[in-house]
Structures are given as C-alpha cells and as structure tokens.
Image 1 (cartoon, rainbow, N blue to C red):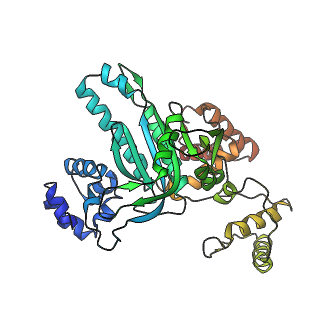
Image 2: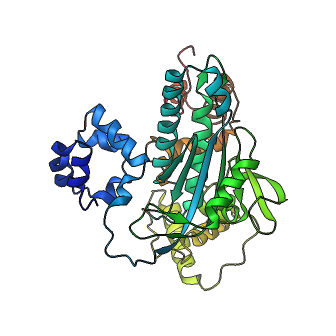
Image 3: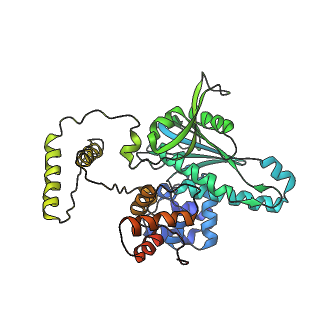
Length: 389
C-alpha cells in the first residue's frame, strides 16, 4: 500500500523527482489537485508530466493509507459531473485503432484540463465516460457553479475537435449534488448522486448540459437555463426536476446572480450605510478619489450593503460601475474591466468583431469625445482587431 509520495513516484519509475516534490511541500493529497501547467511550473519534463497525469486520471493516489479516517467511510456532499462522448461506437467502427487511441487521449486530457482548472477531480474513467467530483479533495464555496463552468468549457473545447471521418465531436454532461459515502482506504464512492448525474447525462442532447434541481438552486442566477420539467429517470425514485444549462448569465456580480427576485429591505445596517454615504459625499465634494474596504465574515451581508449603497446613489442620478473580481478568471488579464465594457456595449455571443469595434468607437469617440487612440487601447484589452482603422 502506498504510504508516501516518494513510494508512489518510485512505483511509476519517477523516484528521481521525489526531492523536487518534497522541496515544494507537495504530498499525495496536493498532487491530486495539480494540473499539467502546475507540474510544468514545478520543472517536470513533458514525458514524466504525462505519466503522472495518466496515473492521476486512474485515481491511484487513493491507494494511500488513510489512518485518520474511520473504517466505515466518510459522508460528504459532492457535486458530481458525468461526461460522455457522443457517437463513441461510431468512432470505433470508422476510425483506425491507433487514431482512436489518440482521439480518446486528447478527449480525456481536454476534459481533465477543464475540470482541473476549477479544482475538480477526475475520480474514474468509464470507457468514454468521465466521472468527476467537485468538493473533493478540495472544497470551495460554490462547487455547483464550478462544475457548470467546467462543463461549459468541456462542451466548447470538445466541439473544436474535428475528425475527418466523423466530423466534430460532441459530449453530453449531467451534473448532480448530494451526499455520497467515501469508503476509507478504498477507491470506492457510493451514493444516488452518482447515478443521478449519469442519468441526467443520458437525457442531455449532444453538446448539452443537464443539471439537477439542487444544482440549479445552488448555482443561483449565475447561468441561464431551460427547464425540462419533472423527468422519470431509470433507477431514480420519484420524479426528478431537471434543467438544461444555456450559458453564463449577464449577472453583474455574485450577489446579483444569487437573487432573481426583489430582495427585502436592508435592516440593522444604518450605521454602516451612513458611514459609506458620508465617505461618498466627502469624495464628491473634494472631487478626489478614495478607496473604501468593506470587510467581514462570509454571509454577514457585505454585498447587500454595497448594493443598497449603489441603489441610494443611483436614485440621486449618480452613475455607478460594478467591477467584480472572480477566482474563475485569474488567468484573464483585466477581466473586471473588460467584462464591464462587454456589458456596457451589450456584446452578443455571435456578434462580429467589426460590429463590436463600431460600438466601442461610438462610445469612446462620439459619446465621450475622446481620441481614437483610446479606442485602440481598449480594443487591445478586448482582443478586438483594430489595425485597419
């Protein structure tokens, strides 16, 4: 039984890299969360990275001793994602076996990259099916949202894979959240949530994502959905309400996404509101900018206070801009600023770059009277081609 990362690496004939992981304080639990980019940053060559990623996909770190856990297993709430490749049987009949192997590896690596970017964990490969967990081994506040975002990226990435003999590939994805039991010391997780995710995948159209009612409620208004009503799913007791994910919503913030209906009046925060409004009045009189840090424990109402302040200012004719940072966009430069421009200009998903540039030029030059050089500056941030202008 594997008891350390050194032993595990030796089993893979990669023991020479044990010191590198030790120097960076990477143990087996941490290793499960590392992406290919993380391994590259550690300094691992291409070949060892691929061997490690293959072993991780097979779940081999689960074989380590878990002496701190009870032998009965552990109950956990997980968000489960089940992804299946559409038309895999046709692939086996029409594609050369060697090419098929290459396609499947690329499919698995693509899914692993999308899932890993949101700290999900591939628990098991089931033929052309992929079973992934969000909430283990790392837990976050919004696992349902992470799973949906990973699913959307998988659908987009796989749709770009085109096979000459077959055409573009597509996947079906089902997502469910619930309690599972993780058996101690074994690569074994049981619970109806896993079956539910698989059944939801079965009712999804090619290129579609279907989620359970619980996932829908947990993810809030971050996404747009199409209701599928109550479905009778094989092996699942009773009727299951399901939703098809259409895409990311245009919500300005997590708070805006969490509320689809009008919120109740703010109660018990008069002092905080007066302090914030006083700071605004001071800034407005001095005509000099100032930053205010609003901090507190999660759930105490920071976003609600900020929203109430903006409502009060906008009632007086003040124009506000909402710039929201997010852990989902840590690799997207200037995301809060670019997202604000995209909302302001109402860019459509299939709108041409030329049309977007026209809107940007109209806003900056015609509306604000600023020089064309500012158009070029913002166009670069938005990745819009502007050289011909």
